[in-house]
Amino acid sequence: QVQLVDSGGGSVQTGGSLTLSCAASRYTYCMAWFRQAPGRERERVGSIDQVGRTSYADSVEGRFAISKDNDKNILYLQMNSLKPEDTAMYYCAAEPRTVLAGTCPNDVAYYNYWGQGTQVTVSS
Image 1 (cartoon, helix red, strand yellow):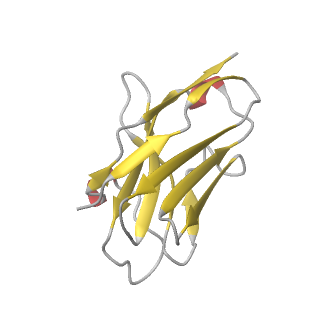
Image 2 (cartoon, one colour):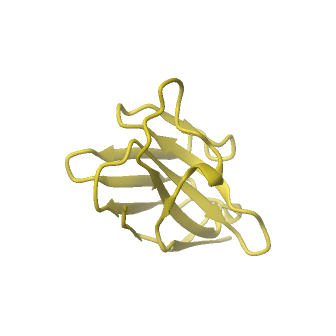
Image 3 (cartoon, rainbow, N blue to C red):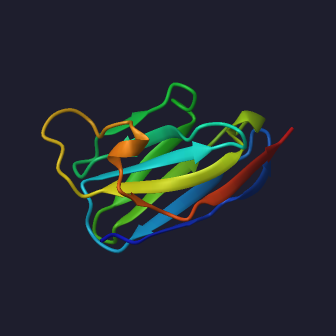
């Protein structure tokens, strides 16, 4: 079992920045951020593996950065140049299974452990 606790959400204006955090109860190989806006499916923001390889959705590439403190098992999402379309509930996700090749999977279904979510609202 892995417990995840998301934090750091809030309300900002367009162009602002926020940093989200996710504390995990133990080691997991893959960790990721997803988001879900009202009436829309949950979508991947990005992921990071145990050796620090990251991948991002096209919509956030260059604006968001994922990092991880492996000693403390804390995942971060630095969000810059925020846009109204970034408004959503943000969830961290984790999966302990090792990925033998490539970056961590993008699919919601791959991840078995989820945080409770933290709301990000960007106003124009």
